[in-house]
Length: 357
Figure 1 (cartoon, rainbow, N blue to C red):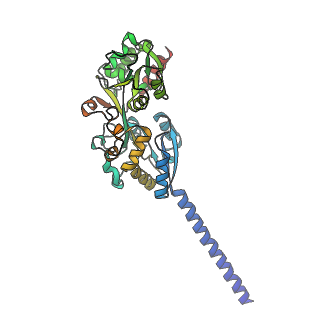
Figure 2 (cartoon, rainbow, N blue to C red):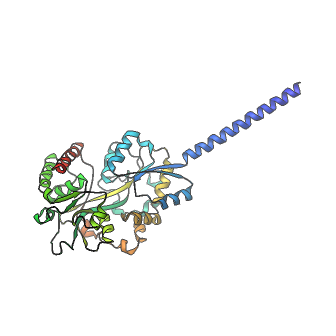
Figure 3 (cartoon, helix red, strand yellow):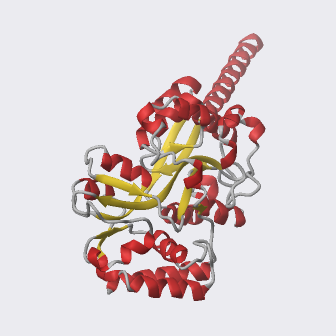
């Protein structure tokens, strides 16, 4: 009886221990599976499948990615769901400044990024991130003017002021982005595109009302087809969109405005309280590799800050002066940085008024 009882007791203990061991292993596996991910929230087209698959195969870390179409969308979502919902995000320069000032970004430990050395030094510690600790500059570009020479073969166009000429009535494509258009007007008036002075914003608005007769349409999402297919023959354009349109329309010319132009930089960053911090660093270090930067650049037709990555690009892209302008041209470039809430509200209100007229 006792032996039987002791045997039963042993079996019971064994079963309990086996169950506990199974529970520990299952929990560990589940925890490991849960932790072995990185949640990436980036511009919708910036992260090619090829890059995601290569990272997952090399590291075993699952990439959960979501895309957005504007900085405002990304910012609003993080404000709503909390910054810890994602591990890597991709804000543009002026949103790096805004989010850093609001405590929404982690301070980067670049000692964990062995490939950080690949970044071109001139992009480090920019005006929008003077400490260089909140964003990793990656893609960059600028805003200029395009003209279709088939329609304007002899037109002398050198700067923003030319877009106000009466001969371009009903011709202009204007980017559907208030900061872009107001920046052009502010620069034309001799002001900084990053100024929060409401009097200067008002002056820019008044100058822009004089441009309205020349505007054919506002658009940012279909610029390549509009310009390439000649639905608009002169106007504003981002340099990487110009490159794509010019690939199939040889009548296009890009002009760097003599008065100056804004430059933007898309940065990768880690939101405050990211739950998979080490995986975030592994992902960032991976995309800082030259071979991966090349894939990202070719996929998006955008300039990259990765110096050895640029060296791997096809010569037609690497040496394209529209994508990689010479230094004397870049001296006229002005980084976009954050502006006050009051100025942003003024932009938004004036923008609606402009588009209603």
